Length: 429
Image (tube, rainbow, N blue to C red):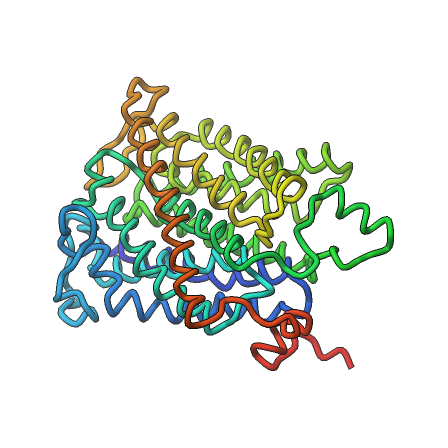
C-alpha cells in the first residue's frame, strides 16, 4: 500500500462527505423559508441512514462476488465484520486499504439519494421519505453501481465507462427525481405553465410565486459542492497520480464553462444574469464532467461544460414554461440531463492518452477512432434511464400504499419545518 495514495483518498473521502451538507444548503436556499430546515435536515439524515445501510448490506451488494453480473453478494462483507485494517482489494483499489475504499464509496452512496429530494421538496412526509430512501438505495442504486463499477458487472464487461458517477449517481438520481415529481404531485399553486404564471403575477395573485428564501445559501452550497467535487472526481483515480490531476483540472474547467454558458443563456432569455443561474450552471458542469473526468483532456472538458449549461438550461426552461411537472429544484434538468449528456460525451471525447487507473486501461472514444465506446455508453444510458425512472415510480407507489408520501394541505401551508419537525429557521421576533 502507498502512504501517499492513502493520504489523498482519505482527504478525498472527507471532501465528498462535505458535499451532502453542501447540497442541503444549496437546496435549502432555493426553497421557501418555511421549508428551509426540513430541506437541509433531509440531506443530513439521508447521509446518516445510508451510512448504516452501506455498512450493513450495501457494500456487499455492490462490490461483493457478482451473481451473473447483476448484483453482488459476499456474506463476509455484510456489516464489514471480516474486513481487517490491512486488507486490500486488488481488483478495485490495490494501493489503498479495503476499508478506505469502502469509506470513499459510502460517500457516493449517501449523496445520490439526497439529490432526489430536490424534486419533491416542500411537500413530502419525512417518514415516507426515509422508507423510500432505504428501498431506493437497495433496489435501484446498488444494482446500477454493481453493473457499472464492479469488475464483474454486466455493463462494465460490456465496455461502459463511468469515471466518478455520471451514470451511477446522476442519471439514476435525476430520472428517479422525475418519477418523484410525478408521483408526489405539484405543490399547491405551483407548476402552471409560464404564461399562466405571468398572468397570475400581473393580477397580483402571488400564490404561484416560489422565490428562493436565501440566495447566499445557494451560492455557499454551490461553492462547497464545487470544492467537494474535486474529491468526488479526482479522488476517483484512487491514487495520488497524474490521472487525479487531470481529473481535477477537467472538473474545474467544465464547471466554469457551464456557469458561464448558463449565465449567458439566462441573460439572453430573461435580460439579466441570475446569481442562482450561475450557481446552478456550475453544478450542471460538475455533473456533466463527472463520468468523463478521468478520460478526457482539458479542451474536451471545456466543450462538455459549455454544452451542458446550454442543454440543461433549455430543458429547465421547457419544464417551467411548457409542462405541468413540478420538479421543484429541476433535479431532472440538472442531474438527469447533465448526467446523460456527460455519459454520452464520454463516449465521444475519451482518449487513451489519459489512462484511468492501474486496473482500468485508457479508452478511446468516437473522436479518437473508437465508435464502439459511444455505442457502449448509449447502451448503458438506455438501460439505466428506464430502470431508474420506472423502478422509482413503482417504489414510490408501493411506499404510498402504507405510508402516504405527501403531507396534508394544512401541513404544506404551514411548511414542513413546523409540521414535520416543530422548528423554524429564524426567530425573527
